[in-house]
Length: 321
Ligand code: NCD
Image 1: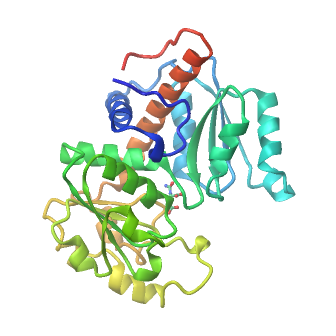
Image 2 (image 1 turned 90 degrees about the vertical axis):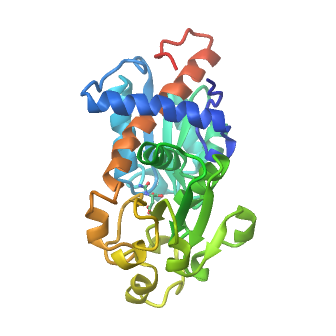
């Protein structure tokens, strides 16, 4: 099994075998977590810095927990409150970081491409993208893939409907790339105003009707209406949006009877999803997604750290893959 990447910047750069390697390791971390075996020392002696230039609950907490469970020294910088407000450039941030000598750098940034830029400027350090603008959110797509694989027993030839605000969603973009690489059938469902430009190049089927889009789906993935990225009237009203595109029992009935319901969080209950569906443990895997998030971030940091150590010419001390 292989994993060559030294950074985790996006799904775009990963080979399907690297994705499988990562999922397999995360699967083991998830099983160990369920058995209460949460702590290892594969990142002992390494410093992990989390820099979130944008709000986050799940992603930041799970990267922090993952690092601690693997024995890293973890520090989270409150970036929103500090330098970005003072207008510090990313280049200056990179220089500061080079002086601090972190080993693992976890970055979320509101601008697409900012994490790639930072990765090019920091020295001797593995960078993990925790979401950049509308571009990519690789660990979210990986945790979604692991959740699907555990629920469905496979990650290929599934019919997966990604619904809602696709245009503003890095989660959708990374999922389209990952699920496409694993040869699934992807449908994008939502109002035309919330579909990205050049949608036809994505190789997905596109629907503006929920019932037609969900027909026979194995997986229904709902997206949050990303109001903070909208600069105009993309939808008539939230009420109207819920009526046409909100997932409720009536629309879900068009999917397969054993279809699972996913949402990356945070959820707008009563806007893109009915609260009862979100809480239905027979259909919703939303809490499993959060659980798999910790395991995926453990696996991702473990694998890039091995490559970092190898690149530094030191012997890796990681668990066997
Ligand atoms: C997503 C994000 O930040 O891109 N959330 C997350 O990481 N769990 C999706 C969203 O904000 O809607």
